[in-house]
Image 1 (cartoon, rainbow, N blue to C red):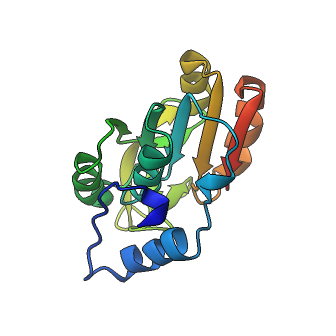
Image 2 (cartoon, rainbow, N blue to C red):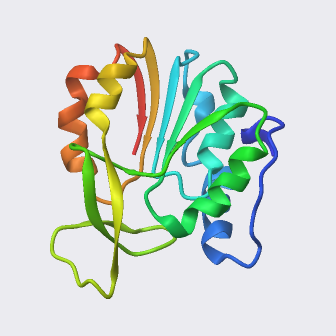
Amino acid sequence: IAPARDQRIRVDLDSPLQIDVFDELFLDRIYDLDAVTFAPALVADCGGFCGFVSAMAAGAFPRARIACFEPFPGNLPNLREQLALLDVKVELHAAAVHVRDGAADFSGDGIGGSLVQFSDPSRTVQVKCLDFPAWLRASAPESLVWKLDVEGAEIDLLPACLASLPRRTVCYL
């Protein structure tokens, strides 16, 4: 698959969600990493789902540090299997990117889940949150490719991260 540049891709054909995301990424190329005109020092895949963007980044930027963030526990087994197939080590953070460390209620599953403030305990799960602006400051990358697909949390994360973004940053929303 051309966008993955020889990285192996695992698709669960029993999962309509994985098939839809596969189509968006590998056929429609909604995150066209060929458009990045520099070799990033860091790729942050926020909202990792099943690891397809991390796989694309591993093929496109084999020397980059790649970090994948995914809060939903139900997605982690498939994500771990995908990341294990790659030629490049990807850091997996089983956490939601947020503007603070701690925990929060998460509603939804597969794709489209999000952190919620007012929750029904029968329909939510508590997930770990990672203070992404602080993590980004500590990482201090010289250049960054940032995929941010976190179902509404972008409104808080983008302004909180602006001062820490390197001059060469590409952000896919």
